[in-house]
Amino acid sequence: MTCTVAGMVKEAMRRAASSVAQRWYEEGGWNTRTYAELELRAHHIASTLRERGIRRGDRLALRASTRADWTAIEIATLMLGTPLVPLYPTMTREQLIPILRQSAPSLVVTEPGFDNATDEFPLPLGELVIGARDGDLGELITSDLSESGSEDIVWANVGPSHLFTVAYSSGSTGEPKGCVILQRQYASVLEMVTAAEQHPERGFAHRESAFIYLPLAHASARLQQLTSIAVGGEIIYGFGGSAQILTQVGETQPTYLAGVPRLFEAAVAIAENDPAQLREVFGDRLIYALSGGAPLSAEVQATYEAAQLLVVDGYGLTESSTAIAIGVPHNWKPGTVGKPLSGLDVAIAPDGEIIVRGPNVFSGYLGQTQATAETIRDGWLYTGDFGELDGDGFLHVTGRKKSLIVTSTGKNISPERFENQFRAMSGTGDFVLVGDGRPYLIALAAPSPEHVLDVARLRDTVKRINAQYSPQEQVKKILLVERPLAQEQGEVTASGKVVRHAVARNFHDRIERAYEGLEDDALISLDNALTRTPNTRVPYAMS
Image (tube, rainbow, N blue to C red; front, side):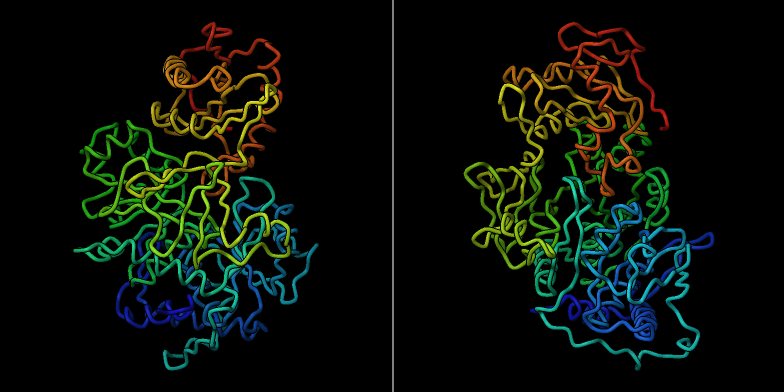
């Protein structure tokens, strides 16, 4: 057993030296790089960082889009023993300043055009700027390194208890906190995930070509990247919106794809619900895909099943070094997030919260002793999620503890169960319940680029779900939102999770009007049909 991420990556890259490691789009076509070439490139980067003054233990912040260079920079930090602090490209100046202050990196590596707030919070070694296009490392490659070879590559001596990363969540529950994750903690999750993914007959055939497009600053995408490296597979880097990404999937023909429900819903819309066309979208080589964030609707799942495409789910937190449970083709039950990883203890607390104990549990929140003590108790990580373990050992995630709505009547309601049922039955866009401190629940329904809002279907679906709940838990009104929830507005995270407090803030005036009983052209009352009668379909509109 290898006890460090650095050791695992180094060994894997040497084993797969002649295999293709990366495929990325540049200058009108797809380029590739072998593992030997990737290691040499990472060595060049590491040498530049050494020249800049970076030493083992110094933290390096990386703010860049998902690209092959991101991986090369990460490997360079492993060579140096430099803990990485990933930053989302979409972070605002206000979000960056407290993160930089808390994580105290020595240097920021960034793409051009980003405001990294280093004028207000200067770093010891400043910034290095890479090129705007993938493959252009800009200031990270110095001219005198062009002649160096593999014999010059040196990996620092990194131990199991050395810091691997300070990783920040995407902030769906408020201010992000820095998760301190050691080399041995992340190495353990890599070992558990690769053990779970290994098929009894096919081995790691699905990892031959893995397509990644989510932000690599996000825990899930970063784990996908490092898992592929650990087994010597190729990583394909996607970019753009759903339609662009699906075009790239068709061009590159991956064997594995990790994404969020919106991508898989978009594919069904593009295929016009035709299983044969859907199979063409993903190509003949795709063995299976992983979807995370929310369940796919029954309608969408049925189309994938008819196309003989398996889409599984998984579950984890940054605090658990990402993964807790994953679905795999040889051990899968629809409607679950798979079985907990072997080597973890997963239990359900008396109030229904999922708790986890194992070698991948993080060391705590950077500089936040109280928050750490509230999250890790008696060796157990309290996830903040509600869930159930069924008789076959599969994990069901039913809601977020911090998302509880407490109505003015004192009723505690977990909104995710209702929202997930709605998604599964309707296949529409975002659907968010509000009602904290209110006498009843209202739902906000937003379109997506793939879905318009059909009023009749919305009303019928909510009424059918309402019949399963007590009166206090039922949705009384639906407020139609004219645009999709937007990351730029802070309403969804980089990985597609809804930020409830931002939705409530941004639509505050319309929510107030709905509770006051004032007229709104896009307010559906479940008791009296429409408050006023708008068009029967609300089209998608750009914000």
